[in-house]
Length: 271
Image (cartoon, rainbow, N blue to C red; front, side, top):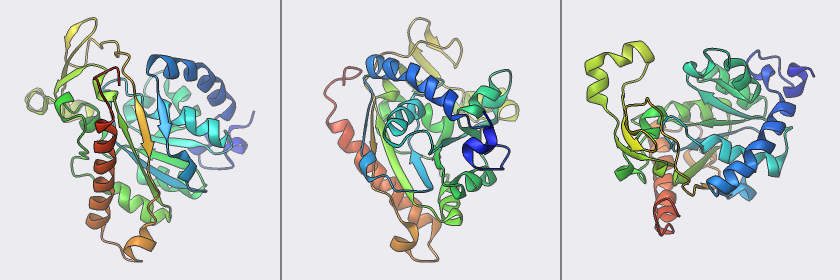
C-alpha cells in the first residue's frame, strides 16, 4: 500500500497516513471506548466539507481519550478517505512507536504541518491548551483555558478553513487531578528538559498519588463530546479579522457548550 497515494499528498508528514491500519485499529478501539468510557459524540451532522480545524479542550492527563473518541465516530460517519490529523508534541514521535503514530495521522505540531494538512482537505485536530489543559485540576474540569495560546486562529485564517469547536466532559474524572505543579516544574527545571512548564500531581488507581509517574489506570468515566457549529471566520469577522476577537469568541462558545454538557451530568464518573 502506497502511503503517499493513500493521502493524495506529497508532504512527507501527511504521506505517512495509513487508512488501512487506522481502520483496523479503530475497529479494536471502538468496543473499548463504547463500553469502558461509554463514549458519545454528538453534532457531526453539521460538520463542514473539506478542510477544517477542530479546536478542542484537552482532558485525561497522560492518557487523554479525546482524539480516539472523536475519530471513532468521525470515521464511522465519513469514512477513511477523509484523514484526521492530530497536531502533537514532539515527544510522541520519539522511540519505536513514532512511526505508528504517524501512520495513524499524528503530525508534529507546527504551522507548516497544519497548513499542509488543511489545504489537502484534511481535518486537523488541535488542543491549544496542550498539557496545561489536559492536567487542569478536576475542580476546574469544566473551564476552557488555553493558557493564552491563540496560534490556532492564525492557522485557520491562513489556510482559509472554518474552525469547528468541540468540547468534551468526563475526561478529567479519569483520576483526581490536584495541581498542574507549575511551581514544582520551575524549581526542578522541567521546562528546559521536556518543553513543559508543569509537573502535575494527581490521585488515582492503583498507585494513589502520582506526579506523572507512576501512571494510574484511567477510571471508567463516561465521556461525552459535543461538536459545535463551524465558525466561518471571514463571514463572521471580515477579511481582516482580529485574532483576539476570534479567540475570545471561540472560547466563549466552547465555555457555554461545556457548561451545558456539565449541567446534564448527574454524577461524577457515572455520567
